[in-house]
Image (cartoon, rainbow, N blue to C red):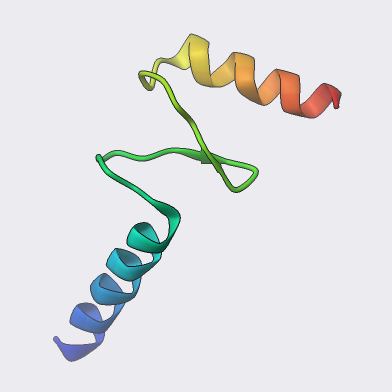
Length: 52
């Protein structure tokens, strides 16, 4: 049980460090996705990142 508690705490602290305010939070190339988590929106960001 302690192992699970420790992992949850690590994840919580990492989220706070990155400025996560809501869940689910999506990160693409270490940048928080700023919009509604739709397939189309996330796909467009990924495609743009792949081209650059």
